[in-house]
Image 1 (cartoon, rainbow over the protein chains, first blue to last red):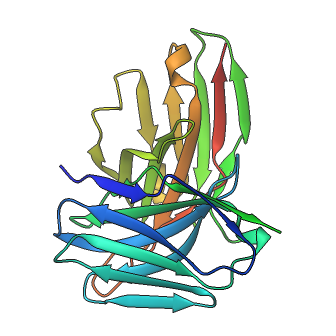
Image 2 (image 1 turned 120 degrees about the horizontal axis):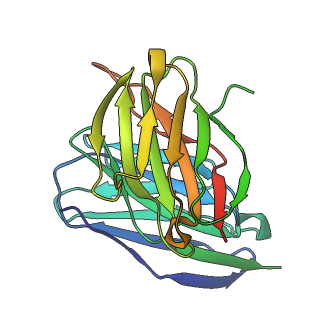
Length: 111
Length: 116
């Protein structure tokens, strides 16, 4: 059974800092890995999708890496802003069907 | 708006009542998923459809839950005889599927269910 863990559970940083969120998964036979952002009481917004054959994806200030063999992914956020405050969720797709999510990292960026 | 749409956004119901939620996926997506999320947790998979066929159901989906996707377009999720433990955010997602498809999942805004 696939299990996804995200560390840390919560993170508070001053504006402008670069930061790294971590995600690990137990079954390396994944189809892809996706990072999402969730604002309180809202749905999920897709940030980055890394397919199993890829090692990283970039979008603006975000960079996500994937190391399938070690079962790890990181989400790097450069020059953090207060508007980045949200919960960040990592999810892996196994066998081309369901997504298995971690519990998320709650990020607060202080002005 | 061409994203995933869910209705209603909020639902408050009394224990024992039936409720039905609707999801309209992105039109060209042939896969549709339902997830449930409780406070402080990541979403948990409930079921998914490829076109009109329901291909997988989680053990979380008790016999009080039923989902349909007639004609492979919108989907409904019905909960019968609601219990307080059903209180959660119900999320719908859609993605393309097929050879060479980039199976990125897009989520709706969710339906927040409160059972009192």
